[in-house]
Length: 168
Length: 275
Image (tube, helix red, strand yellow):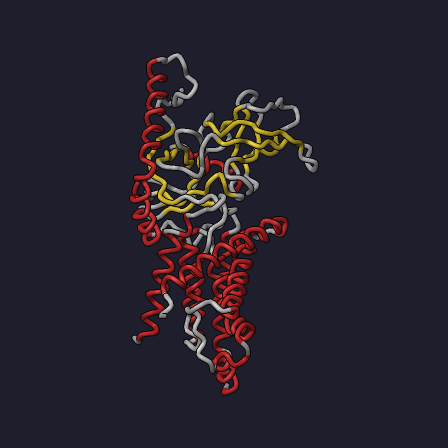
């Protein structure tokens, strides 16, 4: 049990609890909820264990599904985000991301912002497609994705700044 | 053999991903069909406990309105008691057996959702209190939903605000039946579909539950007609109904236990077998 995995476990539990107790109950305009629990997948160490990330995101999504009574939609979308995370890294930070020390929870740069944006959009789009499950609701899916993405990104950035204040 | 092992080790992440994806997608697909019960639901010990703890804090913010609601309902019940001639909402006494057909259990909503297409509530009573799936749930204002999944101490309720729910309802004035569904758009309104064109409907008419199902007794309030339009495909009326209930703010609910439901369902199943 080293330091990194301990940090991951506490982040997992804290984000899950915060999501269930606070963010699931916001219901802005009646239907917009932020999902800042995806921060767990975003903030997972860059060169951490990949199968560990897959399993942990699946578990995280599954526990969200339990709380939301939503079958397996959170599990599926978290899993897909976790699987494509290296590709998004490559896109946002350039090819050599693994050799640099990419730290996400730090001051916001365009690279970091684009990474968070793409990750959240992928997650939310899959989430709402699976949740609605009907193409006749396509507009509904798109508006929900866009509005929730905005809301999630704002909360994510606020959380990042709260847990990691700049040292200077 | 060696090559198979190499392949598995080389692609272990991809295989794990595919395995988990298949599991989650099958859970998703299963959750979208009405008749298959859910494996992952909030009616378990862990999630139920968390929701109950949150609810104990949450309750304090709504004490005043809840008290007012209870006082109003008490006043209404007293009125019924003192004016026994008014038999509109009196519990029906079965004329043959002379006993009440339905039992009412009280429970509390500890988790409420209304912002997605398939909404479920969680209540803090379960099997040990005698709650089973397919019992009707109402509150003082009108219907709330139908019990879906139960554990020992908790149960989930398919809210009327769930695109999968379908409840038998009728127009109080003319006794024309229809099915109550939700189009997923507004948490204050549900739709009554398949109302025959013969029915004279007008804005403001009251909609109540029909007596055709074993889940709800007859004449429980649902809402009033807000808008009437004709379905182009089926040529039946579709009515927008404004719910009596504020589904975004639910406290105590009553669960209706129809003592005859098992008998009726058994009988109907026998018929199906014979066919």
